[in-house]
Image (tube, rainbow, N blue to C red; front, top):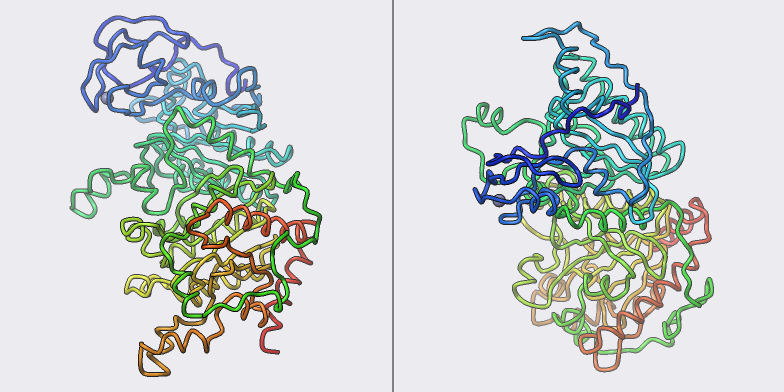
Length: 577
Ligand SMILES: [Zn+2]
C-alpha cells in the first residue's frame, strides 16, 4: 500500500468555512453552494471561493487546502507522478484513548482518501523538476507520526539520489501523540535527512501553510534554505494558548503569523496563493547547483570596457567633495542596482534568529544568466526611505542575514555579489546587546573561507568595519565617486584635530578616494561614473557596474573552490606585509 494508492471514498471538506446551503459540484470536489467566511463573515458563493483557490475574495483569508489540490495548484499540468512510497500504518504503542489508534487511522483514511498525512510526488514547477511532499491537515491534524516522518525522509532521499530540489508544503499540529516517543524521533530523522541535502548542495524550500506547529515547525519546516509562507499562516513551536497560560499574558494580534515571523527574521517571503507557482518556479530556476556561464561577449579575464585597473588612469578629485558626492541621497541604492542589473531578483528576508534588518537587503538573482546570491547595504532616496532603512546602518541581524545568504551561496555553489554603501554599522544600544562586534567578526571569517567567488562593489560610502563585513571579496571594485575609509572624516577630525571642522583635511589625509585606494591596492578596479554624476544617469551607472562585475566574475568562475579561497586569503594576507 502506498501513500496515495487508496481510492478516495470522500474528499476532505475543503474549508472549515460554515456551509449555508446544499452542495454544488466543482472540478475538484463538492462544495457548499454558499459559505460564510469566519473572518469577515461575508457570504461567499462556493464556486467563486473554489475558483479563487479557496481564498476569501472579500478579505483575502487563505483557507485550508487538501494536499491533493495543493499539488494540482503548484505542479505543472501533466506532471506529479506519485513517488509510490510504502506506508506501514503501524501502531507502535498499542495506543488507546477514547478509541484505539488504528480506528482513528482508518477514519482519517476514509475521510481524506489518503493513506497518511503527506503526499509525495515527482513533478515540475514552471518547467523546473522538483520532488514535492505536501502535508494534509485534514488527516489527523497533519500530525507527524512514523509514516509521515518516513515519507518526508524518503522524499528527501529521493531528492538526494536524483539531485533534484525538494519542496515541502507544511500543515501540522505537531507530533502524533498516539505514537509516543517514536513520533518524537521523526523530528531528528527528518532533520538529518535535510542536513544530508545541505551537504550535497541540493536546494530545499518550505512552503508554510496554516497551521504549522510543534515538531514539524521545529524540524523540516524551518530547516529549508528558503521559507515561503502564505499570508496569515501561523507557525510556532508552542501554541498560543499554551504560551498565554504559561506567561499569564494576552498575546498581541497577529502573533506567530507569517507577517509577524517575517518581521522577526524567520520567514523569507510571504506570498499570496495565486503567486506561489511563479515564485517557486523562479526560486527553483535560480537555485541550481552549477553556475550557468553567461551569454555575454566578455572574455574571461578581460577587464570590462571603461574600467580603470591601474593607478595612473584614476581621476584625482577633491577628497571632501567626493565624500559629499558619495553620500548624495539621490545616488542609486542597492535595490536600484539589483533591479537594473539583474535578469531576475528574488529578495529573501531574515537572519532566522532575531529579525530582518532593513539596512541590508539580499536574495537570489541572475546576472547575464549566471545564478548568484546578491547582498547589499540599503539606504534610500527620501527621508522616509532613509528612516525605514536606518540610514543604511546595519544591525547585527543584518550581518547575520548576510551570513545566512552567503552560506546558502556556498551550499548551492553560487557566486556572491555584495554592494557596499554604509556610513557604518549601527552604533546603538540594542546593536551592542545583540553582538554587533561578533556579527561583523564572524562575517569576516566566513567570507575569507567561502568556497565560491565573491565580488564586491563599493557604490557609495564604504564606512569602516560595517562596510568590510560585506567586502572580504576576491575582487573589490569601487565607483569613481565612492569612498572607503577606516573612519568618517568628521570622526577622524574630532579625534585627531579635536575639531570637526577639520573634516576636509581629514578626508584628504585618510586617502579614501577611489584613485588613492587603487594605488594602495585596497580596491582592484574603478568603475567610472557617468559625467555629471550617477544620480542623473542611474541606468548608465548600472550598466557600467554590470559590465565590471561580469568581467570580474568571468575571471573567477572557472577556478576551483580551493583556488578561490587561496587567492582571497592571499589578497588580504598581503596588507601590511
Ligand atoms: Zn473573508
